[in-house]
Length: 349
Ligand code: SAH
Image (cartoon, rainbow, N blue to C red; front, side, top):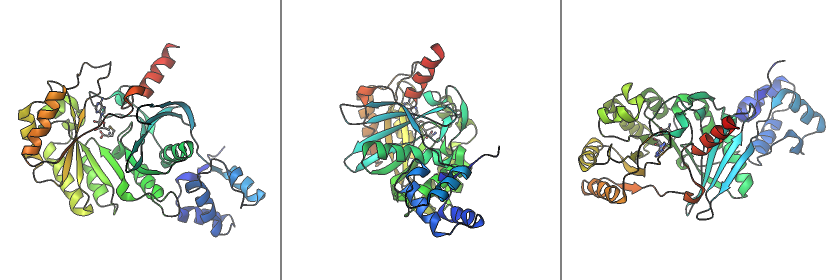
């Protein structure tokens, strides 16, 4: 049996071409695209302005990817929702909805698992299973918007996976989710977070997009960075930072430098000063994240006094700093820990 085409990953233009080859009029492509990406249909059955015959034909030739929720946790404290979605092949992924004053933001996964091996991260413990398709990235956003009945205005690609390790699907996802004939998100409201894959950053800079890039920095020197992030052995900080400068030059988008504070590893004032010097000539700000301890590692969160001192030190040196607010604290876990605990349970049971 030949595999059905993944219709949700196609652009209007691609769909139009295919339909024409099958003798179907071009305007149908726009109708179908609208059903999938604006009305967020989960089946061809729902597409009631298409004839029954056409719907049956689509059913035969195309696959319409939809996710089922394996688990949802809702925070009573701040309305954060953590979703565990099951994919067509049985794998599960994690997505999070965060409610802010400026809108609803969804954090999506870009891969099933991850091969980057960051020492403090739960998502990488089982390695990489596979890349997500654009349709599977879109479906996380669509499913959550349907579930809450509220518009999603922001997307952060900060869930499980390294988005620049799944480059083509990432870019296709961005183009589809910002298509004005679909969900029509603003590119400026999309953030892509990377551990620092230099060729990927350089390529994204030339893509003609205006999404925000967040760089997971986590240390001001290659030496310390290498102890936290194996990717630092492949790409030196100076090259990562010059790719970031190129990114700003090409896109005009200011960067976010993420820095997870780990007690006794990267949180002393000498490191704060080195960090300030390192990014002095960059356009962007630092986002400090108190590390979320995971049970497989013995990293400990910096205490609030060290965090405040670190922040103050950066500010004195003229760097813009925010400290990430912990969302959904009452529903536990973060950064791939929901998926991890689900997999652990499954293995035990
Ligand atoms: N692979 C991408 C995106 C996924 S991780 C990246 O590395 O940027 C999103 C962010 O969460 C990264 O900054 C990552 O370093 C951070 N992170 C992962 N696990 C964490 C933990 N346990 N505590 C704090 N930050 C964590």
